[in-house]
Structures are given as structure tokens and as C-alpha cells.
Length: 323
Picture 1: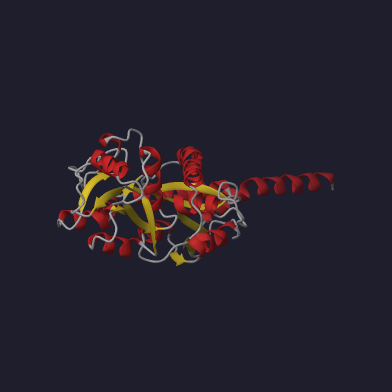
Picture 2: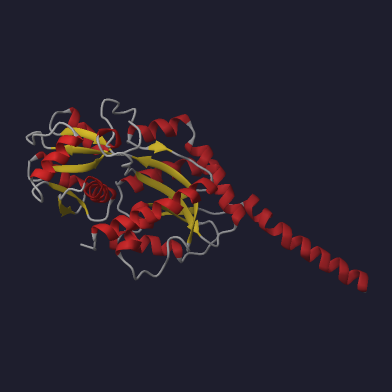
């Protein structure tokens, strides 16, 4: 009888040890949902859909994009934070959802550092500063000089809390200039008003701003990434144009609820990296002004340790509040 008991205990212990591995090997056994906390058609949505298509092929299960929109991304982000940590509900977020919004709205029912684990950084998307051609400015140095000569008179437009808004606020702080922020519902209306001369400039996503610049309807001054981008090699960076250290690219990452089993997160990381490193995906992303990162969990975690406080500090220093 004692021998039988020890055998049963040993079998149970073995089952407990091997159960997570078996679960990861079998995962997924049903469709996976990727929540996008912003509207369809934007950068977060586009990035999620490109990744979801490839993960569907690699995982052998449907990976569905679910747009849960509202309250500056809070609704969708909270949904994933409170979801079962089983690998079947994921989030594609950005610095807006993970850093800016939590700094703007201090009474949230979740914590983006405590309640999420980063799977991988998917891609980054630099911005480009575009101005109306009538503005007597040909460079970032010219823009800074004009802004100092006309404090509070030069305007930039964007959706409140988004990267184009935050890039402008960072520029103001770094250059020590007074630019007037004009809130819009989205980048499209802001660009339309820049084209009409109603506002001075937009810190625009590359796929939106560069076609207008190439057509001569707006003037591109600089990109906001650390290095020049291949799709606009003649446009300098802000950093090399007079503001060393300036960098304000949009980043997009895949997240899971923090209690998700590590082996499932590791599998998602490996499959995402394999999917994103495909030549077809890189080409498709580049065509949309997105540049693949596809890093390890450890690399993404280190990135988030500096990136989240960076944007939270900008929100505080600029005195940004919900609009």
C-alpha cells in the first residue's frame, strides 16, 4: 500500500512539472484574440493586422484582431489587463497606451507595468516635421529661431496624447520654445489644416506627411528617429539638425496579461520574431513607414524600463491633461 502511495505521489509531482510544458506544446488550441485599443486604420491597428495574419499561419489557429475603442485606449487596455492569463487574449499597444495615457489618467483600474508582460517590440515608426511652405523656415534651426522670435504664435496640431502630440511637446521642452498645441480628433484633420495654412506644422507619421512633402504641398524639415530613414534619406534627423539626443518615434509592442505562463509567452515571442523577420513582412511594414524590431523578451523589458518613465515625465513636465 505504501509503495502504491509513493508511486501515486511521484506520478502527481511529475504531472505538475510537465503540465506547463505540455500546455505550451499544445498552445494554441483555439483562436487567439489580439485587442487593439484604438480605431481601425491607425498605426496600432495596421501593425496588429500584419502580425495577426502571419501568426495565424504559424500557429495553426485564427489570430483575430479585436478593436475595443474608447477613453483614449483605456477600454481595450483594461480589457486585456483583466483577461484570463492563458495566452488567448493579447494586446498590441504603443507608448500612448502603455506610458502616456497612464500618466494623464492617474486613477486607472490597471497598471501597465504590473499587469502586463511584454512579448516583443513589433516595430517603430518615425515621425516627420512638416510645415506649411509659406513659413520662412528651411531647417530645424530656422524653426527654433522663428519660434523664439514669435513665442506662442507658431502652432502644431495632433490628437491629444498621441505620439505626434508628444513629439511636439518633447520638441518644445528640448528647444525651450513656446509652440501652441491645437487638439484634433486625428492626424487627418490636422494635416488638412496644415495644408490650408490654418496651423503651422504637424509632427506627422511618415506615411501621412511624406507624400504631402514630396508633392510640395508641405515642407519636410526633419525626421524624429535617431537615424535617417531609408524611405526619406534626404531628410535629416532632428538630432543632427540642432537638438542632440532628440528621439520620438512611435513604437508598437505585443503584450500579454502578466500572469500568463512563461512558456506560452516564450512561444509567442519565438513565433512573433519568426513571423516579423520574414522578408515579405519587412517590405510590407516599410511601405507603411514601419520598421521591424522583433526583439527578445529581455530586450523589450529593458526598453520599457526607460521608455515608460520617459513619456510619463514629458506628460508631467508639459502639464498635459486629458482634452
